[in-house]
Image (spheres, rainbow, N blue to C red):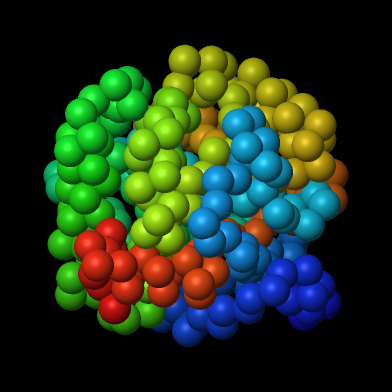
Amino acid sequence: MRLLLIALTAVFAVWLPRAPVEGRDRDTPPPPSGAGLAVLPIDPGRFGNLQYARTPLPPRAIALTFDDGPDPVWNGQVLDILDERGIKATFFFVGQHVQLHPERVREVVRRGHNVASHSWSHPTRLRRWSRAAQISEVRRSYGALEAALADAPPADRARLEPMFRFPGLNEGAFLSGWLNQRGVMVLSAEGGTDDWRGYSAARITRVSLNVMERNQGGVLILHETRPQMIRALPDLLDQLSARGFTFVQITAGMEGRARALAADDPVLTLR
Ligand SMILES: [Zn+2]
């Protein structure tokens, strides 16, 4: 663990220590695969070689991301599966779901995961909307996340990340530029499994392993709203660990975070 952290510090220009998270974390045994925390020097940036530059993670390091929640049924199961393995992830939540289940957001950050925006209503043709409507999709989603975390401890609130993932990865140039001006990272991925199509657990595992091997790790997209993915997840994570992959948690660098807070019309207002 210590060696990994030193290595990560050497790889990345910025190291942002996080306050220990209360509760379950202290009781969680050390992760077998050596989970770590990578901080990306990201401002402004678009990452994920499905569309952009490769996310700057060390070779065979994987950053898990879960989209489309919080799901009241499956989110807790994902957290339990991650806890059992000492893995921290990033959740890209849909604002409408956050408004319905704010308690899930609080639980996710309490257990050491990061949360970010996946828009308010998940419009996959967002780039065709008016500019005002596109901005509203971002602002409403962050408003819901901030409302959910308004009374959370500061260390938990800090887990709200200035990161955005376009619904369906369907980027639009206007909104991407608007986000970058405000220090919000646009994150695609090195791989996904299209598990939202309803593929079987075996197929989700096979495709995820293949895409992570092909890319030597990177950001992996999974969807917490799919029962097949939940069934696949324990074995998938164990197989990745057995192949020597490590799991890292991505977070915005200090520069991006500062810009997200300091803009004239900031996207984030929590401090
Ligand atoms: Zn999505």
